[in-house]
Length: 75
Image (cartoon, rainbow, N blue to C red; front, side, top):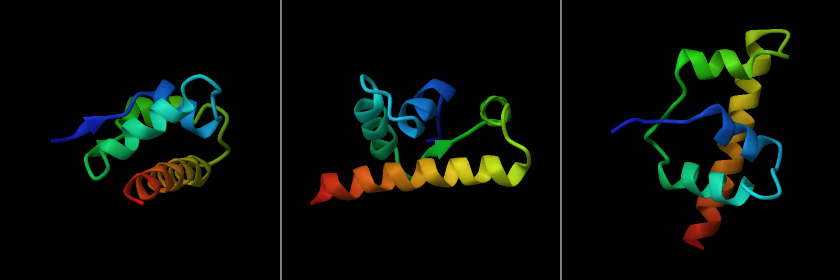
């Protein structure tokens, strides 16, 4: 089952929100392999990007952070 990720959850993780970063990272890690980012969320992430590659880099960074949380949970 696909799980859509909201922009706020992504921003919590990417910008290390002091209140929500850990919870949001854990939720992303809990749904690893089921995540999807729809075109609206992708557009919201791209408001300051200069190219699609910038947004893709942002998403890659998000996935790396979430994977790190997932790996640490399994340890």
